[in-house]
Each structure stands twice: as structure tokens, then as C-alpha cells.
Image 1 (cartoon, rainbow, N blue to C red):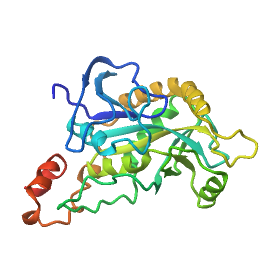
Image 2 (image 1 turned 90 degrees about the horizontal axis):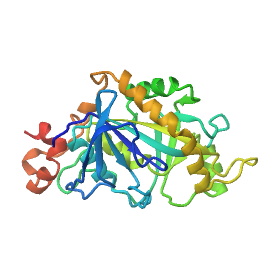
Image 3 (image 1 turned 90 degrees about the vertical axis):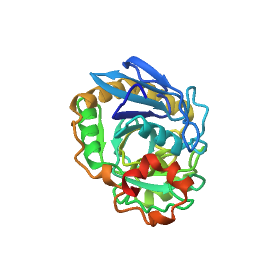
Length: 288
């Protein structure tokens, strides 16, 4: 690749391009897991190389279930990404996390059922540690970056990922609240888990667009509501990402880059050549 980047932004609903990127190059990539959602745009922002990927494709034509999460993460890894910031729309399951607020969650509850959750298998087994699925170090820096915009931002909370593409029923929404969930969306899983397998730091700037359907005094969530709130928050997103590029530490202060060190279970002598080749980018340093 001509350009190597360490910071990647994955844009969700309402964010299909990254304003402010200069000297951009577009990479239409392929991976052992298929094609990513869209060409990856790499450019300079505040003197730092940044990659941008539209999670749902340009024009939002890919549903949450249909997203090729493995190809997206693999492609960003192949470009040198060491840190990923996900921009996601979410519904709030808490009164104090109001529409227009931003949440930097610290936990995930995976309630999806139709997605490929791992790069590994077919002869090479890995059991990755995701007790803390978001990188604490990157999350702390993302929180500080949003705080500088003077937007209302919350640190912490559990992000439940539902399969979608439909929104919740009232019974489901109230059950999730009873379970202690904080926000709800459709794309955090398996994206965060795949990033950990790829030894990439991962955090989310989750933009609260609505109160899901549990709130008796608020209108039930609609796609128009989601887009309108996200559009209002786009300036905050852009400013927060610019702030992050300025304060991002030069070196990672976490163990994400060594996440596979104790995760691989298969004797290298019995790994099929095809599996070894397919996962070379991720596991080579541990298999040689």
C-alpha cells in the first residue's frame, strides 16, 4: 500500500464520508473474507494519516446483518490500523442518556444471532479475551476529545447489540432496561470482538438519537428521527475526531496489540496450510 495509517474511523448511520481529510487516496480492497463495505479513504487530518470506512456502504445500502464485518476489520488491519473509532447511532435505555448526548460505552451485550463473530476456525482455533471489549486507553482519549467540544458526553455503559434491521418492541425494550443495558444499537457486535482478534484498539462514540420505544413521553424511534439527530451531531463528530488526532498518544498504553498471545489453542504443526495463509496477517508473529 502507498499509505500506512494507524487511526481508522468507521462511520455508521448518517456518516458516510469524513469531511476535513486532505490529500485523500481511495482503496478498493479485497480480503480473504471478501470485500469491505466500501472503498477505504485515507487522508491527512491534523498532520496524522487517518482511514475512513463507511460501515453501511456509501448511500447506506447494507443492512446491519449484511455487513461484512470481518472484511472491514481485516482491510483496516492490512492498511496498518492500530486504533479504530466507531461512530454509531444508538437508542437510549436510560433517562439520563438523552437524545443528542454521546456515550463512550465500556461493555457490550451481544444479542445478535446471524453473524460471523470470529476470524478463526477451519483448523486454527482462538479464544480471545473480551472481558473488557472496548480499549480502556483509547476510550479515555475519545472521551476527552468529545469533552473538548462541550457536547454532553457520558463515560461508561453497556451497549446491547440487536440483530435488526427492525427496531425493538416495547416488551423487548423494557426487558433490556431490566437487564441493566444502557444503550442499544445494531453494529457494535461483532465489530469490537473482531478488532480485538486483529489486535486493534477499538472504542465507540455512540450518538443517542432516541429513547428506543420504552419512554412513555417520547415518540417511538423512526429512521427519520435517527438521521435528524445525527445530522445535528455531525459537527460534534468532526470536531471530536480532530481533537482526538491532536491528543492521541504516540504509543498504545494497553495490551490490545498482544491480544492473541494467549488466545491461540491449536498446535502449529496441525494447522492446515489454507488456514495459516488466510490468517497470516493476524497470527503470523505467533506461528513462526
